Structures are given as C-alpha cells and as structure tokens.
Image (tube, rainbow, N blue to C red):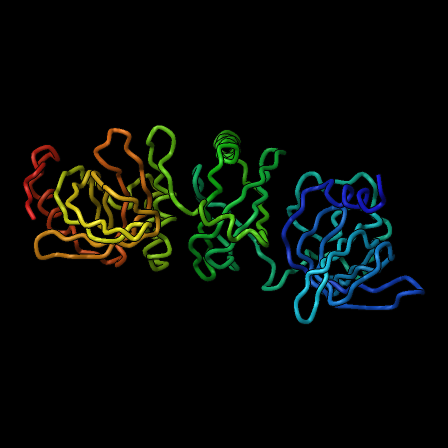
Length: 389
C-alpha cells in the first residue's frame, strides 16, 4: 500500500468529528520552514484535517499546537489537496505521531481510547478541554423521538446547520446525523434527524437504551461541514411507519415559525404527556389556493380531517404541493396563509393528504370552530359537513 494510502487509513481508523479548533502548525523540517495559524475541519484520535494558506510538502514533520490549551504534539503531513480560491488555500491532512485524545474532547467517541500512552504530548499546565470558536459547548438531551430531538446548550448552532451527534450511553456509542431546524439563543436547538431506515433503527435502539438504563448520556455535537445540500430533503417531514404521528417532529418542524417562548412552552407540555394543541377530528370544507411545484394552480375545495389552533390535516388534494410550500385557506369571510409541513400520497385516487401549519403563530382561523366544539361537546361525526363556505 502506498505511503499516502497508509496515512489516510490511519487517520480514518477512529471516528472523525467535524470540529473547528484554532491550531498553530510549525515545520520541523530544515528544508521547509513555516509557522501558520490554521483551523481544523475534522479531528479524531489519529489526526486531523485543516485549512492552510500554504501548500505544505507531503511527509514533512510538524509541531501541532493548540495555543488556547497550551498543548502541543508532533504530526506528519499525510495529504495535501488544493482548494483553489483567491487567495488559494489547501486542505492538509495530518497524522498524529502518538494517537490519542490530543484535542481534549470531554466526551470523545469510544474508539478514541488508544492503548499507547501519549507521552510525547506536552502541556505546560493542567489539561483543559479544547475551546472551539464561540466557547465550549456543553449539551443536554432533553427530548428525543425517532424523527427529532432537542438539545439544551448555551451556545447552540444556527438553524440550517448540518450536525453530527455522538451519544454515549451504557458503554455504547450512537452516531446520529441531522440538521438544526430551530435555534433559541442561550437555551438550545431542535434537530431533525436523517430519515434513512438505517438511521431510524439506530435512533430507536438509542431510545430503548435511554428508557432501559436511565443513564444520563454523554453527548458531543459537531458541525458537519459541506453537507448542507444533502440535508435539504431530510428536512421535509414524512409520516412514520404505519401512519403513526411523531408529535416532537411536528413541533420541531414548526419551530422556525414560533418564538422561543411558544416553542419551549409547547415542548414542556409535550414532555408532560400533553398535546401542545388538542386536535379535533372534524370534516370541514375549505377553499385552498396556491401553486404546486410545477407552477400549476392548486385552487380547489378540500376537506379537513382534523384541526388544531395553528394547523390542520387536509385530504382530497389534487396537484403536487411540497413540504415548505405556502398556500391560502378560506372559509366564510376568513382567509389565512399556511405552510405545508408534510405530504402523504393516497393510493385510493381521491387525492393526497397534507399537514399544514399557520404562518402566523397567533392564527385565529379555526378559533370559533374550536370554541363551538368545546362548548357544545358535540362529537366530530355530528359536525361533519355542518359548515359551508
């Protein structure tokens, strides 16, 4: 195996975390002198990838220093890839001379446990965790479902950030991919998980472990650089297997349209086993207007399956609306804007079902229906078709 392939294999032996850490890289070669401040893009127990303003020669030994932690070690340049740009930059792969948790990650992945003692790593002071840009992030998992989770942190990532989560519980590690859907300053962030079947199975196993052992999980969350586009489709909500709903996922998907107090109040209510907005099973005709993904008008009369203060489930949809599209609903003198949250195909040929949420979090579109239902105590069946446009 060529030397570069061996080096790449070594670097990839342990879990790589997408983490930006300011480091100084200094040449230890007599033939090539440099000392540059750089930022890592990925780190693990065997090395790192970093962005350099210099094209560093392959195979050069370097001193790698985390200045903020007063810690340094030796590494070898294993790979150099030009990135272009003006000024030009390079992606440099470094292989640590002594593998281990040189980075000081508090909850490092389990495969970072290297048998060799890192005797060559030098510290002028007691070891401190590495502090990435923006301060050290600590995470607390407060809510989780197969589709989403909420993490408390004083330094959450911005909405739209693809993330990689390492969750360790009962001596087992789970790596989860997702994208931040809602962020609340100094409080936390809501993450929608990747929706592949393999990923869903992994989350289900984690939930089972959390419920069985009641152990507080150890969590690391890092930014997953370069994966923004790949997660756009995963942001679109889908109905779970068998048509079961995922209340946490529904809340998270609406999180960007709610202020922090509204979201956190709904989250607390759900945590206590209460529906944040009771649903009323009722069939009401409404006029839907909008444009589908192909630019064709969606103007049609449809029926509700159920309603809540800020949303509804509609059926009999003809056309191709997509999650994220905005539509208008009208009934009587009322008209409001709603956003499509999920689309469910219907094989019966009578049209699709869509879940919608009001663009205005203080929507009053269904208020009089909800009030009338709660006051009269009428069953949903008794209200079918009771209202006309």
